[in-house]
Structures are given as C-alpha cells and as structure tokens.
Image (cartoon, rainbow, N blue to C red; front, side, top):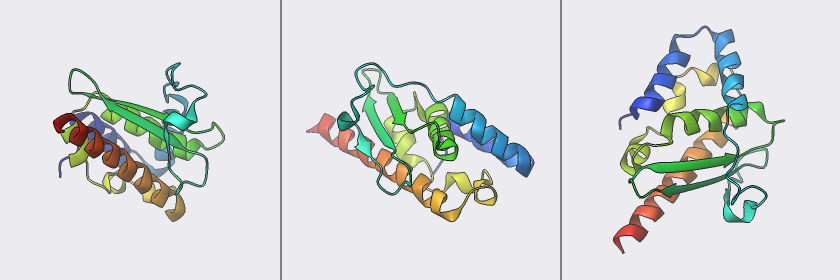
Length: 146
C-alpha cells in the first residue's frame, strides 16, 4: 500500500515534528476542516455515522465526474482530535483517485506519531473512520461498474 502524495506530505510533516508540535498541528487541522456543503449541512441522515467514535462523527464521499474523490466530514468543535483527523483526511485525500484512497495504509497515522499524543480509544475511532471511508469508495466503484 502506498500513501497518496497529498497525505504523505502531511504524514512527513507530523513525523518530523517534535511531539508537542504534533498536538498543535492536529488541533490546527481541526480548525481547518472545511464546512459541509449546503446540501449536507443539517442533513446528517445523508451521511454515514461512524459509531466507533466517542463523539458524533459523520462522513460522506463521492466520486466526481473527474474520477476524483470528494469527501465531507462532520464532527463537533468540542472533539478537536477527531476533527483534526478528519481535517487531515480532507486535506490529504480530497481530490485523490478512488484507487489512491483504497491504497492508503490502514495505519498511516502510526507513521505520524499520533499514537504518542492521543489515546488508543481515539486511534480506534480514527481507524474506523478510514475503514468506513474505504468501504464507501468500494461501494461507489462497484456502482459505477454495475
């Protein structure tokens, strides 16, 4: 598995940063999570809930006409680590091909050093977010070929 270039840049940034700066960077990504488009804002029923997360977390994805991924995440501001992970995925995988998303290593966040700054419970939630995202991508690809 190969980390897509946009996400790899973020992984490298975190890996090279001292531990205390990793937490600050994660919080910065939480603040930079793009807002939901109007058609999804207030319509969580159109998104998938990631029940493994301690906080209400929702995601949606679609493959655009350009065969690039469009990703949306919804997490409350009072969940900064979860929002930060969503911000990382948004920055690193929006615009990637479906194949690049599927090829993303399931544990890419280990190389970032996130296990040193957040709890194992939150890491399991992050793994669940990526798992569900990949499942959505596989489902969309299957629908395209059906």
